[in-house]
Length: 254
Image (cartoon, rainbow, N blue to C red; front, side, top):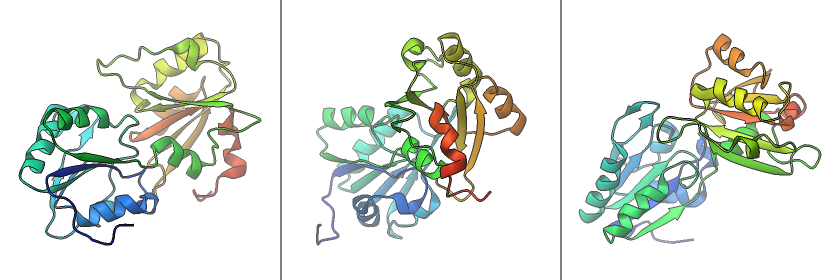
């Protein structure tokens, strides 16, 4: 552990803030947030996490919600360079893990091109947090020998994925940012070989006090999403591990 609170100036730390519950921050993430001169944070970073920053630290919201971008990605990349060049210690805070659908790689490529030093601090990714807090073991010897994380929202707005690979049995598939494409996801998974009765679930606001878990099957999930009006931020989990929720759920009050 470092004994000093002072962080190196002119440097960027790309930090995973975890899935929502502030207590799921790593010790290193909490230390960096508490010491940084500037914090550039995303939409999915909880208030309790931002509150760890020093009162005088600069807080810059760079949140991206579905189709509502406060700052375009290029502007965020440039902002990190500018803040570092001002001689500040900068924490770039991202929900979950910065390298799992967090665009962390794109931001670091800009820093490298500009000669800005950086470090990466991994975080608990949403799939791991939602799985743990919903009672879905993402792998289980009786259910899933593999787990796949996939984005339900591609850069060009399509959902053009490797469906034959995703529709294999004995695995768990977790779709990030997939609520808007749930109908297409379920249709394609069934079309490529998974039974329509395959368990599927949506977890909204995972690990937070208002977490909501919606249980369904591939055949019924789109209708259940429509019926309940469940909105992002949420993950879709597909696979028989979903059936363990009733037995292993510990977080949500029945």
